[in-house]
Length: 197
Image (cartoon, rainbow, N blue to C red):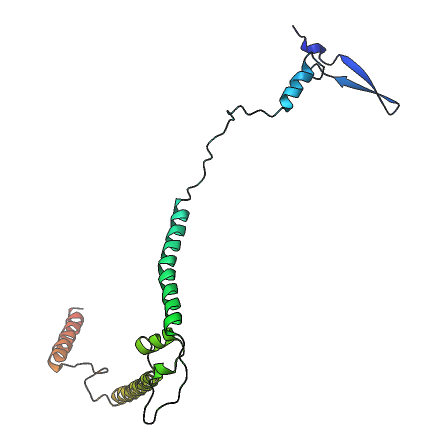
């Protein structure tokens, strides 16, 4: 049996650069038989196929992966047909060329566009410059009419509040019979109070 109280009992003298040093060694640091072979075995790389691996618990990536899949799907569902359409229109239809306008012919607005896709949008989707101008003129006309109506309404309200001669915003109905009845009741109540006192 090994005695733990004697574990620091060996003193080894070491000569380093002609200087004498003493070092305490514990029983763990002592050389045992077969120690070098065991140290050599530890340095050899072994494949024992039984490494202690544990399952890493991480947050779920399902939403992120699903979102990426849907973005890629819908991007390519739109991008592939549009790419094919653009390529087809540029190969088979091509860009427009300017040519002289015949006598008496008024060109349409989309005939001035160079690309076939732009011509399609201008012809079927966008509104023309003339339509935009007429819409803007109509907007200005309606705003001017609204301003006129508001000014007239403001003037009418001012006159009605000034003269008090019309039954509208500032008119308070007055029924003389009810007023006389209430006034008589008040006077009777007051006279009863003073008479009883």
